[in-house]
Length: 380
Figure 1 (cartoon, rainbow, N blue to C red):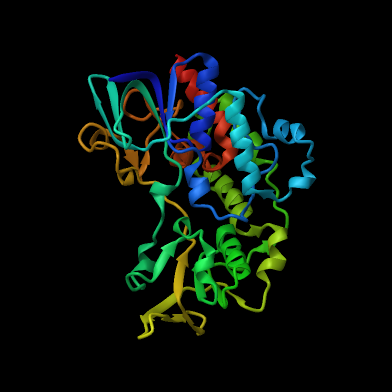
Figure 2: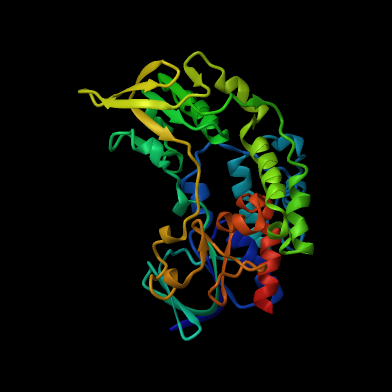
């Protein structure tokens, strides 16, 4: 059976960042997962990212995104807004700088025994490791609000995570539930793929389309390097204030470049509104009554309802030796200041770490910070 000192499960931004830093430290690391699979398979072509040029993957502060665009002879202004394909190219370049080659497989089963972890892969291979990082990303944690899905007929809806081929909506009528960037960007992209009509339904006021201020986010994320536990030490009111600021930047402000693409005759915005009822028609379409009194008939419903960590949704984790022993709070893993779970040498990073480290760690801005903390802990 093959062994590795440090197994990183997941080849998304957090997994890549941590594996690269661990390798730089001289740790024997194996990273398993299809490289940026979520970004390639669950984000649509033509999408733009909200991250700034100072958000990157390198805990060693060398192969940064700014270094990448400088090598390409570009300026920050030339890649604003940031195309998804440009970030994917940066990630590929970053991996090359560290000669980082993920094993292109998925872990199907992870268990622990006698202080070691055993991972079975879908390619038939098996790995043992003393230390493991779960870079789980978003795909496990799609959020389906029960108060919403309870009103929707089976088969009437999909999540944005599973809705990236927009050609299927040509000539169709679509309703999108959600009021963040993804809801409006999906609406724009679906219209640009010749959908007949799009309705966007959300509970709050229509966000403003203006350039958001993210400058305060990186310094706050990097504060974790000086005090790994600063976020959890905060008074709950102060945590709520910061999360509200983050929420306002992420939900109440949308990128200005999106405005003209959304304000179109066949995109209808329903602010401060929810779905009241849905009924399926004989032709397979759905009649929808909204709380603002309006009605529409659509071919499908897309839920831009985000993600909510819940460790019991991670299907490959063994129930008896991992899940049943894993301390959680509201679905989140309870982590120590080094991102370690209640199980020795099992670490979790990214979105699932946001309860203990703050909302910044649901975005790429937290990648180099988490990578350094975890890498140093594993080096021990």
